[in-house]
Length: 485
Image 1 (cartoon, rainbow, N blue to C red):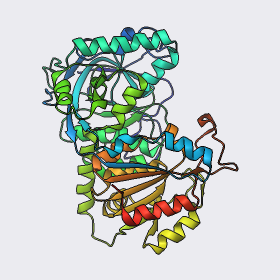
Image 2: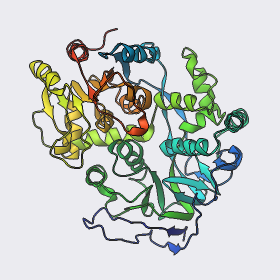
Image 3: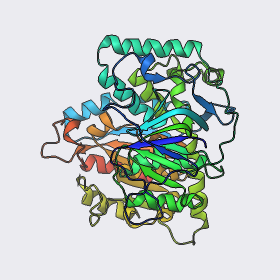
């Protein structure tokens, strides 16, 4: 018997084979169920306090054991060719957009792949889509970004933030990631994966589903995906079925808080870049001194965002390779080379965000040989095949751009955004572009609101986009001529 699982709160363990949503208490074979009492803010009972009491630090804190020793933690990758453009019809917005364009992407920056390896966590607690080990939160992949955000929300003073940055700097100067290996078998041991939710296509496809690639060829126990809520979606089950048929019957979902004595997790090295001085990180960065932005990284929010925008997870690459192999097995059919991707107006599950000027843009694109595609009407394999076959893709900002992970390296993917997406969403899709190695251009246009010269608060929600003649001209030029040098 490897572990004890305790689950509390309203939850749904969902067997992906079942179409019904009845509650199923599906636990790993040989696992005993126990009750866990948790307080409002998780097993520790609080989110405020010193960083050294909040964060689990690999290499310092005990309780994390890789199943095998990783030969590398980060390594140089080709990455995407990225460009940004400002095309607002309003002077004040155009000036703001231009000030915030990042010159870095015109200078062949260094992009790295970060490694993910299966590891055993002991005394582990999943709650709210995140993981604690021995009472401390593990900054692991995308859930690690949310752990930092939660810490900063409850530790807002300048002194608390400075103390956190100082703590991580000390860890980086005196810690390595040479963790003790797990000395036993993991056969039938349960697997736990963190998940934001199953209803946001970008988050599920980019952050959660790729983690399954580490367990397709391993004889572990049940794989439980720990979500922040119990909301479901059709696409999450469809893509899981399509890409991981060999895991049929082994996957369950829950939003309950669950404790394990021992559980296998996919452990990602991205957050180690600012928290660990392991030679496998330091020496790799030293080999690429031509990109000074990688020097002196800290745990500051902007520094961590920089790392996120300039890396992609090995898991994402493995899922891309698996997806393209599955697509190649399908029947051959004609696929469009130039596609204009729009939201399906007949699908109630789709966020029908505004897109003003869409008809005028479509008239121009259609004349250039584009075909309109509704991805929501395609099966998972059809979506993958369509994205990989396209030479030029145009679409408004949205979760669709998670599909860039399936793009052909020679493709040019053009996103239409706004000042809101530049301020609050820029960088979300860079990992998906980097793993494909495609060309990725973003045209920041206007907001689809009554007065596009006003910049609304993001707390009021993300507004759609509006394209005027200048933006349409640029989009069509990019589609025809490609990215200028």
